[in-house]
Length: 162
Image (cartoon, rainbow, N blue to C red; front, side, top):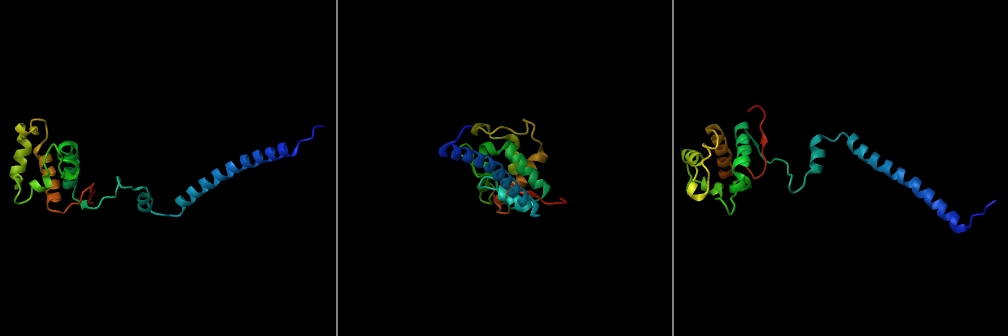
C-alpha cells in the first residue's frame, strides 16, 4: 500500500478543485449571458450596448431619396470629398460649397458639375462613368441637407413610408 505525502495529497486536491471550478465558472458565464438575453430587453437596448465611437446609432431619419443619396455619395464621392461631405486634402468641403455664397450654390450648377466633372482639378465626369441624373439628384438632396444643417454627420436612418 502506498502512502501519499501531505504535499502530494494537497497537489492532487488542488488539481481536482481547479478542474471542478472551470466548468462551474464557464457555466456561470453562460448563465449570465443567458440571463441578459432573458431579461426581455429590447433590441435597441442590446444594440446600444454594442455601440462604440465608430458605430453610432443614426441621429437623423431621412426620406428614402436622401438615404439613397447618402449611399451614392459614400460609393462615389466620399473617397475624395470625405466622409459626411466634409472635404479632404484631395477635394473640397461640399457643405461649404453648397451654401448660398458658395461656388456651387444651385442645384443646376451642382448637377452639371457632377455630370461634366472638373477634369482640370482631377474630378471625373460622372455621367460618362454611368452615374445617372436620378442618382446625382439623390446625392444633391443628401449634400444639400448636410449643407443646410438638417442632417448630422454619420449614417442616417430611413423614414418609414417614404
